[in-house]
Length: 116
Image (cartoon, rainbow, N blue to C red; front, top):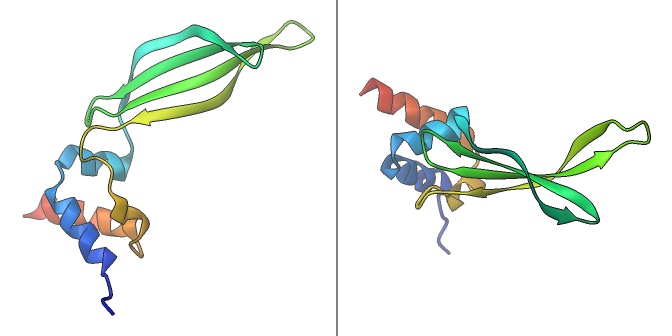
């Protein structure tokens, strides 16, 4: 029986990724607005509002979905009903979910890259 070392697989994968991808996975994305809040149809009988954001480092696109609701007092609010990410090629890393301490391995990988 072969034992797979997912920590080493993750490290090998991280070493091949562009640094912008690794940085976004460590410190989170650097979002800017592509399309600000705008009407985008209906969802469950309520107006659906959408916003599209892009990461200036890695190119990931996040589409946020909201339902426009009006309370009995007439005050409107946007309630989040979900979001969707569209990642650039090679951004997703299946090994992240299988390693013992993926965030710690990721940070150590960035540290080593910055000290060499």
